[in-house]
Image: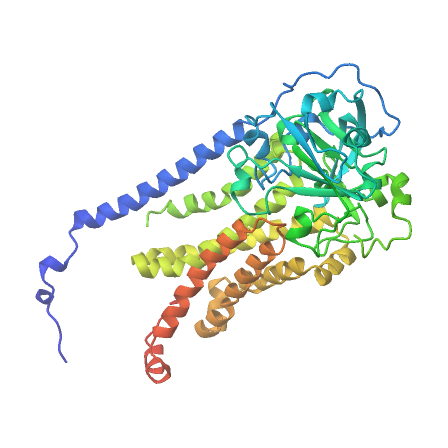
Length: 319
Length: 209
């Protein structure tokens, strides 16, 4: 048996003690620095709640509406800090910051398709078409949460009349602005930009359908769809297109962005319906922001007056 | 390593839950606190699963043998965050309605795989003690603990099938997991095959995964 003597290991192969100790010290120091950095970052984040103050222009002489609910209104800071607005970000807490410098003037809306005459309308002239109403609506997101918002606007039908659609126009399509330089989310192909939504004409002409340019008595904040959006309280939130730049009238059912992205999950109608689940989650209940318990979701989000629009239709098929 | 090193790592691993707790207490969780808690605990479960799976490759590549001493702790933290995540679901989403929960598990693909991923972690947490390693024997213990691969894969699919359109985060987790599991496959493919392995198996120590 060969027994190696200590001298077989040459002195040069042994790590110098200094280096050896240094390595330990280095690892320790790195760990301490890492923990400290994380702690400081965490502390900063914990101390700076991001809240957006009321800053928008007041809208005077608001009329009350019999369509308004008496339910508790969701706090302004929640409605302005929790936004599904994929043009800015898929993170609901980010549009509030990212939309800060979004330019809403000058702004025009193109009217195209089956209309007597194509035209371009200025947003400020659209807003003056009728007197502003406050409508306190329930708003139900397809994700399973809901809010109550005092929107400001007037019936969408007022604008549509102004567009003078032809008799064969059966649908109206809304297009959101495409401005990737202002809307960082549009640089990522999460959806096929620009965002497109649509309604059947009788849905669009329904008195509940609101053309909206304000909320909480003020001009609409950028992260909530300024300067002009629609609000359709009996449908899931994504049907209510924001920052609209185009209305196109057509005789064919428009292909909406979410429907295009996942046809089996997001139908054209997308009426709030507790009996038709999203393929991946239940729609039977919802969490009202600010409430601990979930509450049952109501058919058409509680707006039964739209039921006649869908009589004779199988809402499981036309979801 | 230095004696106080382990408690420091332990506290760092508790960081995310301390942060959540403080934010909940101070009302800083935003408009939908329950959603934040659900997503955060889910994220940290996946992160700790990936950290646990990174220990062996990082140890091999860098030669930092001492890392192995933290693997069990990281694994248990993955289980800890998984428990918080599951508790959030059964309490704040289902309000302990077991019937509804079971219906959910049967019906929703992403819940099915998420629940499976959680269940797979339970035996691993239970047998994580030195006593259990001895009782099962190194080989069997090691085979059992390979369930973490399945759990992590199911966990990534749980996330992937839950998002609406933006799959970037789950794909990132999937990519990291792919690298960590890919490393193991390469090592396995290169390792000496049966005859040679048998001979060398005796020389291998228990925890060399």
